[in-house]
View 1 (cartoon, rainbow, N blue to C red):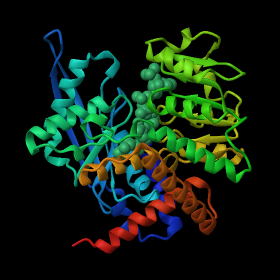
View 2 (view 1 turned 90 degrees about the vertical axis):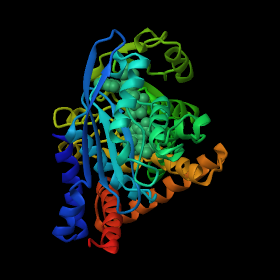
View 3 (view 1 turned 45 degrees about the horizontal axis):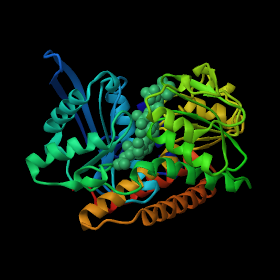
View 4 (view 1 turned 180 degrees about the vertical axis):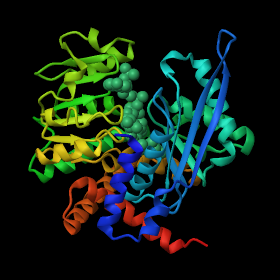
Length: 410
Ligand SMILES: NC(=O)C1=CN([C@@H]2O[C@H](COP(=O)(O)OP(=O)(O)OC[C@H]3O[C@@H](n4cnc5c(N)ncnc54)[C@H](OP(=O)(O)O)[C@@H]3O)[C@@H](O)[C@H]2O)C=CC1
Ligand SMILES: O=C(O)CCC(=O)C(=O)O
């Protein structure tokens, strides 16, 4: 199912659960602003290449709009709109003073050199610099982008507006980045998983995990689960998948990948069919890559007991229904992966204050926000007799709706 249709459907179900006025519902659904720009850059060989860049600013009722920038060939208007809308509910679920936005460029970052990526990022920034800003819309990394991408955006933006570290988060530490931001999404996912498992009298230690994606989020999730005694029995990325029923040696795999190795060449594990990864038997399945990976075609075959949605929008509503009927417990993306934007908020606060926090403080505050949000979602589930996804949507949508009404429309 189209990601925007799916996200809007979840929003509409939550709006009905909350009894929102239909006019307010309509106003919350329409994005504040959609930006689409041409980005033409010179390649290293002297030829030119054109790309389409997007920034969708979904809602700013609760504060400046916030969300990552994705470089991926599948980036298009509907996907960016869906991801921007999810950011609005996510920032509200964890109660940080932001709205929601998302951006992206339809490109294959792996096929571009560093200097081509730099030129593309700078051209994109030149085209949107008037519409972003520390108190307007604050980008961050997402799939295919990282702290270096944020450094280029900061530098290009600052040429127009003066030095502005708070215009992006997820920056390198030397440029005003926060300690703990790199690990934050993965750390938040693990904290969310612990909160969920505790409800069932379980902990990470001794359970089996399958992880799809081994980039920023997936590698931190795997590392932290391994440290807590969980067994990562299978994982995969775009190049393939590997398995070991005794648990993969994650620190060794991270070293192997950092040295430029491929998953399939890692010693001591079996290579498996990537299509088998999501239906591999395990206690906890953690998608950390693309959206839409659970759908009506594969939902009936999933053999995990719990799904922690580290990726954005990994399950479409049809899969949700099938999985729920089969008793699979799903912890939704707008809560499970919010650790990244929570620490982005801390980074922005540090930039505005001009005062750097220690990593312990960052991690401790992250845990506090994650735990509080989990309890608030549980309370919503009880009030509305609904599952965790609807509990999270109802919590987020209700907060945005209340603020919107408070501010008025004139
Ligand atoms: N970074 C952040 O702070 C946040 C990220 N998220 C979400 O988490 C997810 C991952 O983001 P992030 O880790 O930052 O991105 P990265 O670009 O760092 O990593 C993406 C990972 O996904 C893998 N991948 C890509 N395509 C496929 C595929 N078809 N099958 C299996 N694996 C695939 C990549 O493999 P390869 O390396 O081989 O290309 C890579 O391992 C996204 O959904 C993102 O929106 C959510 C909140 C915050
Ligand atoms: O850190 C941020 O601002 C946004 C992270 C993000 O894009 C996300 O949570 O999906």
